[in-house]
Amino acid sequence: KQEVTQIPAALSVPEGENLVLNCSFTDSAIYNLQWFRQDPGKGLTSLLLIQSSQREQTSGRLNASLDKSSGRSTLYIAASQPGDSATYLCAVSTTSGTYKYIFGTGTRLKVLA
Amino acid sequence: DGGITQSPKYLFRKEGQNVTLSCEQNLNHDAMYWYRQDPGQGLRLIYYSQIVNDFQKGDIAEGYSVSREKKESFPLTVTSAQKNPTAFYLCASSNNEQFFGPGTRLTVL
Image (cartoon, rainbow over all chains, first blue to last red; front, side):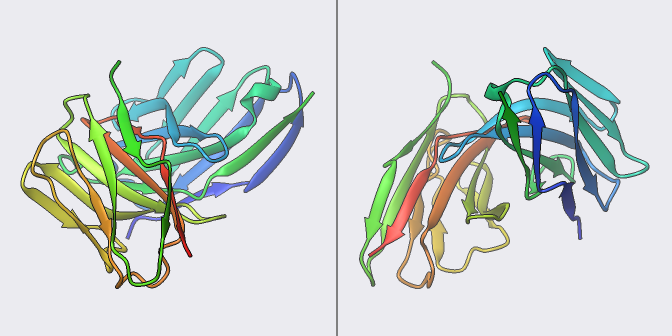
């Protein structure tokens, strides 16, 4: 059974720092991996989608990498800002065609001004 | 504007009542999902549907029911059989990349 883990559960950093969020999964037979952002009381916003054949994706200050063989993905945030404060979740889709996702419990990020 | 809408934003249920949460999407996505989110926990899958008139149970389907009569719509009914329904409910749709609605917060009085 696929399990997704995100460490740390919470993180506080000063503004301007570069940071890395981690996502681990137990079954490497994934179809894709997606990173989301969730603000308190809101729905999830899609940040980046990495297909299983890809190694990384970039959007602005965000870069996500995928290493299927080791069961790991990282989300790199450059030059963090207070507006980046949110909970970040990763999710893996394990079977082609069903688009069924397994979510991690998230990392709660606070960027201090 | 393309997206997913959920209504209502807040919902209050009395003991023994069934309530229905609405989810509509205009993204032309085949797959739709319902998740439940409790404080400090990740998202748990209730039901999902890959095509009209077909749906499958997720990990916590007991006490919930769904229908998928139209591609755009995937309503969720929380029945009186669900013993602890107070939670934040999220609807999503996907054609590979998954997108979410704003959520419905359900409280049992």
